Image 1 (cartoon, rainbow, N blue to C red):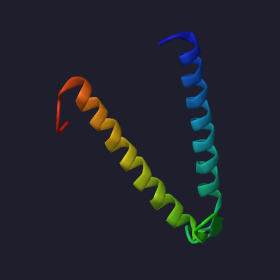
Image 2: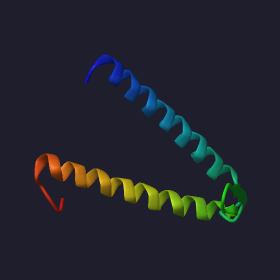
Image 3: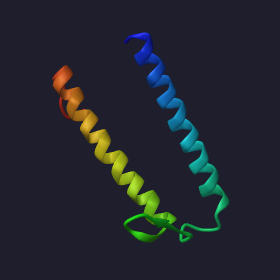
Image 4: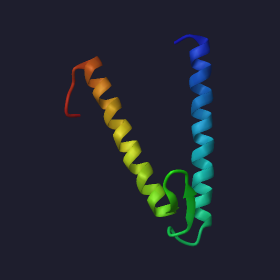
Length: 78
């Protein structure tokens, strides 16, 4: 990995960790998961909906990453 790419990865990871910390703080500060916000294109959604959606997205992208890894190392079903 070149220095420019390394710096990009470091910056992206830092931005992700900052957002995770913000989300953790927010979830800890609300009274329950039924608090609502406005999701563009969806309208009012609960925090429960948002967290469930995030779980789905992480699972989907982890599955994609696993497919890429299988193409690289040939190991399947790990």
